[in-house]
Image (cartoon, rainbow, N blue to C red):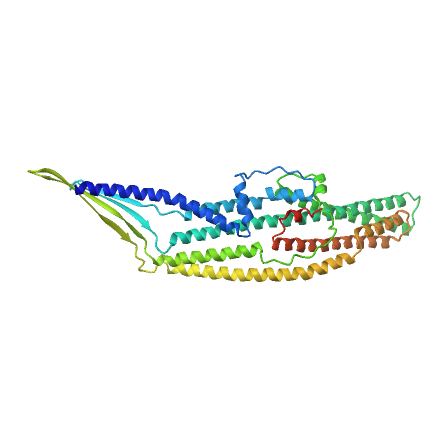
Length: 453
């Protein structure tokens, strides 16, 4: 009777342990994911975490309608390779979080001795001491949050890059129009001198001066077209679609009508939140290595069955149920090096966090001062309409032959240098404005994106 009861106990124990293993792992994974989603909703990267649940597993290029600059920005948010890569890394980190939450598989071991007609069967359940499983899950959760923030930062950086490119396209178009109109004016002056029945030394010198000035402008136009094509190539990679000249004209961003003040709050910068998650993960990893001083324990029932033959009473089967366990003893301090390394990594992450916060604070102070100076300088300059009016007047004098060639060439050289520097100052000011939008988390807002005209 005892032998039957012992066998039944072993079977029941195995069934219960297997059921417990199957029941706990999926549910605990789901609970962990749900808890992480709840926690991440409170993080600055929560928009990415929610968005990934709404999106399909699709990394193909999405179609886009490019009618204005804001359409180009929203198209980039769907198709930019950097964003898709960050999204894939985030999904990978979510899978790693499920892996970290796994319970170690139990061990089933048995042997049979033919000579003695005996068999042994052991079932051992692995017990991790020191909350190692919880620490692994917390570390993976911090990693998933960091990847979510990486995804959001990639979206911000893409918007910043595309916006700056769209403004540069408009500046290049203005400079190209200036070069083409000036080349036409020089051609008219050259043609007028060619038509003269005879030319004196001054007229020949004027002709040669106009030809050299025109050829120099043609070379500048080649350089400008190369820069425009370079920007086109970058946009085609980000948007995922080939772009014609008419597309570039539609999505180029015109001069801003007003210059708003910089946003005054940057404490919710995603870059700061990102290094905070790195510090948290390093702390969990340090605690994991510290927990290895606890031994690994495996424990479970053991069943032995032995069959013996007796001359008078026949064969006899005897079974026994006992307890089997093993303990890994960390006697030789093999994990001290890993713990020291984890401690050093945690210290490094803390130093990096302080450096990042200090860098962002310094960057913002610089932008406030420099942005104010740039905006004031831009406002003190004459508008592009005023400058073009002056240039058209000079071109009219040029066609009528009323200007000295040296003075004319110097005017166009100064004018070209002026508009180039004016556009460079605008780009620097716009870069500081949109960078401040990124630091304050506003760069992805619809009202900010729609402000591009």
